[in-house]
View 1: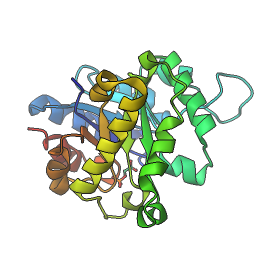
View 2: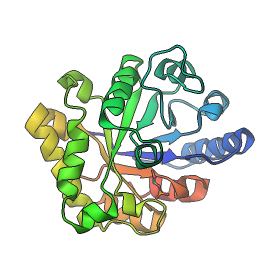
View 3: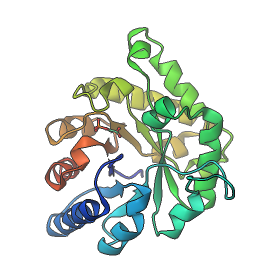
View 4: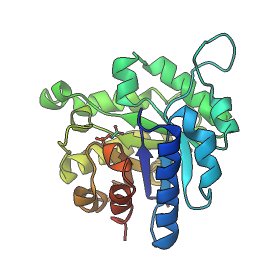
Length: 251
Ligand code: PGA
């Protein structure tokens, strides 16, 4: 059956020293307390190697927040999937709404990034989600469906390696969480879209995380929904205590 996962997305926060300290703290707390989900931290590229050295890979997964759609070569400033994998990281966030919005990432690029991530044995955490206008005009199911369908060129074997994160853009960093019912409805929709393409077994085995102002105070209710398999956590992942408060929502 599918895994429950809590993944942190540090975004563009912390120096290397601060990031190493935060990762150590999370790693220590995970060793002290029992937990019933996989835990991953996704950190800036600059932090990957140093963070890798201070965490126990058996209890805390490590990921990047993006990778290039190109394999290698003259792309100054870019970081390839192979480079990310060479740090020992096992995950990569792709298609975060901030990448789509501020850096113009489109479906074609995201498919290319996903293929390269998979070719380098990275597990993509593939983000989808509607903006406020789309929530209000009722097109949100179609918008998210189209974002998922952008990956439908993948073989069933490859799609089975994807973790999906539903992050309504209006809920990210705003303090405005989707209700547990809104999250459940969308997660069930996403699972149905996957089932229609890849069949029930793959759909049932796909972890679908919720993201957007997820906190220790609302995580339990969100995670209690049958199709919500964990969270992608931004702001609350920057403090070990609040991140652990979310991890502990799976008891
Ligand atoms: P947030 O961010 O938890 O700060 O809302 C979530 C995300 O963008 O992944």
